[in-house]
Image (tube, rainbow, N blue to C red):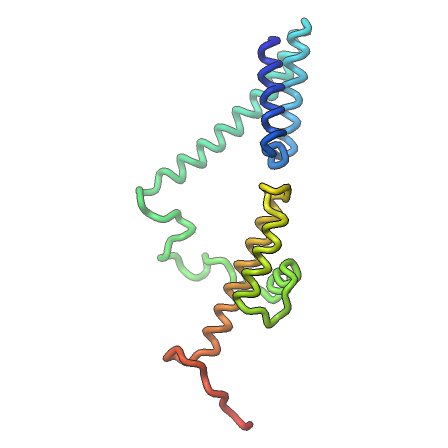
Length: 180
């Protein structure tokens, strides 16, 4: 049991040093702590409570690994070389995600610190500036990095749609129509 304690402590130290502990869910962190406490209790001669704590932590880990394996098997069941189902081009319009709403645009602009007339270059520059400060590898959180990436995607898509709406069917800018 002493060896198990040392292995679990080494695992916890590795998670801390590599920064992976920050990306763990609260439940995973609690289960790691419970496994360490259970192993220490079992090593000190309290086998029943220590074994129970180890069993609970092991059950949690097994359920997590079984869930990941099921997810991988589902993805692997598609034919090789075919895109995942979410990228299937034959889907009908109702199953596609709804277009970005003005509220989503406003939130994306606020997150990146841009105004309404920002072009693609400004969007990319703001994204690079923010992601450099908030990337998980430099101490930021995964959730914030995903929000920043989503904001960039929404704004670039909106800018591309606006660009296309100002072009004629031939691809040239339209001349203003109406009274001047």
